[in-house]
Image 1 (cartoon, rainbow, N blue to C red):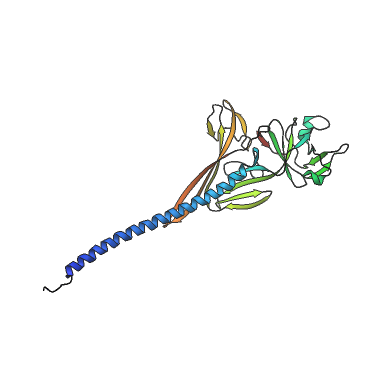
Image 2 (spheres, one colour):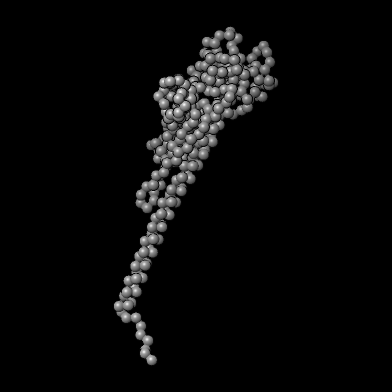
Length: 294
């Protein structure tokens, strides 16, 4: 019988070379997979973060009273926005001034409302609250309540006093007062922080946002949607409706752009999330503009 022989040195070197080649190929595939996984984890984390911020933002915005955009607590524009949230039941009917003069009503520091309650404690509006007064022309004004007292000479009538900040809208039949809470968002690019202020209390909502921008989408007279048309913020606060070239432009929705960054494999990955919010509407009341009290 022929004796069994082992591997020669040449065969062993060839086998080791093949093994090294296979290990190198496998290592490259593993490294590539780990790199891909690192990028995917960064992207997934960014998208989840932006989605959460968008959900909070859109949920509150859908509750805005009649879709009205205000300038309290922050001016409304590209990097900040404010609106009013309903903080009570139905609106309170507003009475004209005893003199019947609209100019007197428009400059007044108090408004007279009707409510079938026995005392100011049952009225639902107290000192320190904020109310939104809306007339049938679509004008609205935010008023800080400084006092509430009954009107003499008759039941179920109440003075809502807003001393130091007079009314600026006209009286019309069907003018109503609503108790609201002001809510605003503002982006600070220097700290990359999105802030929220609700009822006078400000708190950070999101950190490390590389981008935050609000775009106002209007329906043009020709039926097309236009982003930030000329004249939409002529008063410093984007109007729900305004007269522009060719007719009336109506605000239909807001488009929010959020951006965030995350490190991965020694480089920065950035993702942008875009969401749109349809504004609330009401068949009876449609806030065309929110004016400031004076």
